[in-house]
Image 1 (tube, rainbow, N blue to C red):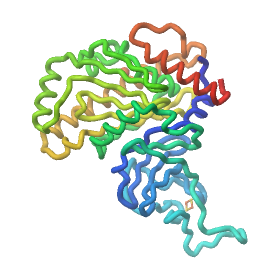
Image 2: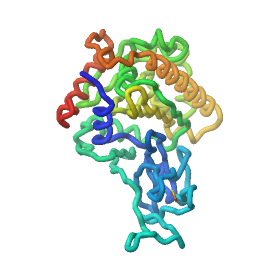
Image 3: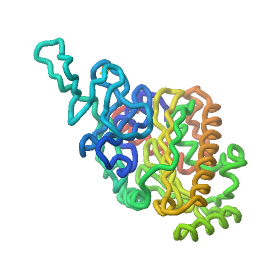
Length: 342
Ligand code: FES
Ligand SMILES: [Fe+2]
């Protein structure tokens, strides 16, 4: 499979991607903004109606917001025009061209949902039910029913193509060499891999006794039956959700920018039960967030070392434990062929 930015962007633009949890934008004025390049992706509660757009003011192009999340009227910092109730309000500043409207719309993207997870697509050519099998949708719906707000957001750049960032996250062969002091400490078993349409999942046992004891203690504290398993669900094409023990869930997006640049956005969503208790849980969540950040930074480091030569990027040589990569490449080829971009 040969890669190009054009192919990745075509797949990005025409498919669905997880954006956030419904409860993050449940009140009027709330937004979630995923930083991206050239333009961010925003979901905004416009007086009860969710809209998704590119964070570009239709006047002269300034960004409306800078933070991952917030609440308030969308006021552009450049000339203070605001976006309200379906249009840009320019106040006393009348348009120069005769007949042009004062209500100018945003560059909007499409929204859909699976359970309480909100998805977006710039220009979808596939239905969300077609992209994600009923099994994937039911797993996601169950996860989304247990979470609501984020505990941590982590945004960085991977210096590699998005597909390579995803591939790296689909195998555990690199864990001991790249994550010796973080992920490797969980002592994960070989695990099982399930093909789920274009997606796939991997479930593995956490064999580290110390982590097991910590999970038992947290489970008792919050009244959760904590399984000592690590699970990773690929949400084809550029996202995944993973969890250790089901205490918290890490949602990761690898959005393509160029041949050598990927926007990486991860969010840590604790099980809602974690929020109803005191500081010991908070301590556990802060150490989970810290370890996750370390793992992602180690992944970013190794991914930046992958050859930038397109021919070397996707060699056919794979080893045991990399079966999900083979499946991912098949799915990617299938989707690019469908769109006539192979
Ligand atoms: S660029 Fe936004 S108000 Fe002018
Ligand atoms: Fe990794």
